[in-house]
Length: 130
Image (cartoon, rainbow, N blue to C red):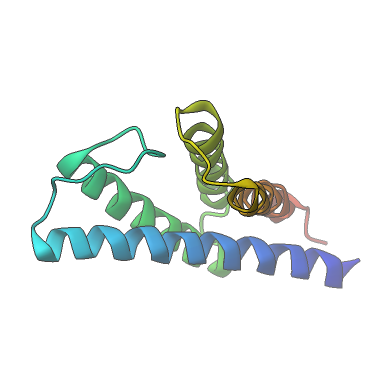
């Protein structure tokens, strides 16, 4: 059982870290290039607010993984994982986003399922230690 819990925690760390690095990287590129006149259909922000949101989500996600890994503030990781999942559901399924084809829908569904799995696996951080 310990191995399964360790694998679930590792999956949560890895998924959250990959999403965080991607979002943080896009935010950094936006600030380095000083180009803030952009919009992504799946996000509720536009322009400089979108750049700030991506950078903030990337930093918070990376920090939550590091803090959870070292056992300092484990409650932040499930919160960030839930935020990523909710943003994916809202951005892809509740917003007016249009899928190009069925293949893209399947990939987005798999990404959303991965985010849900990351959130559920991050809840194992609350397991009592003996």
